[in-house]
Image 1 (tube, each protein chain N blue to C red):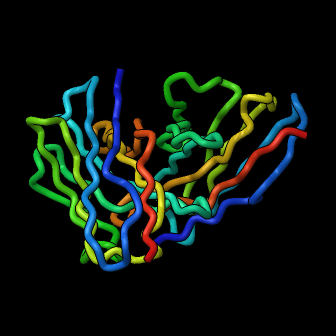
Image 2: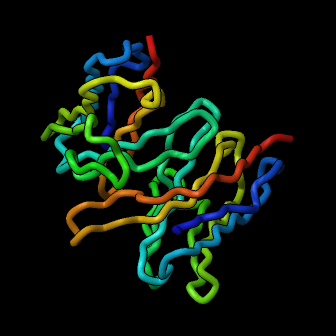
Length: 105
Length: 122
């Protein structure tokens, strides 16, 4: 199975700060999906196909990457972005990363 | 509005069987692949498996395929997960998800239910 390693595990960012979350795959994957999960809620699709924003996702979010290295970027951190973000690769045996918990500083 | 509502979770003893259900609404259920994903109390996310829109094909995580079975009833817009010989490590929140496959290029979970909690303990 392809292992996804997310870094950092936890990070705190100030309002307005640029944030970069990283997901590294143990083998090359074709694209990456990202999900946002807030406490007590189910995950929500956030970014699919590496860089495509899901419906309703603010355009301060972006995604990039290829091969074994992918990123979710927030251009300017806002309080509502506090959540855990999971990356997910497909296919065959689909796997998730362990998540990055994003907090406000 | 797309809605997925799971049910059937609860406290079960090791070795028992349990069947989870997920009722879908707000979309044409028979047009979509569906999937089950679980999240442990430690927040680890694990894909369980998928089922094709007509129920003719299923795919499972290798570690679970001998104990878990996914099925669907398109007439009832309902997805099922049959769990057998459950173990303590099956304790998790189980999510029903809709699979979106755009032009067979991308595969992702575009809607998730609120989840149903399964606790395996004697």
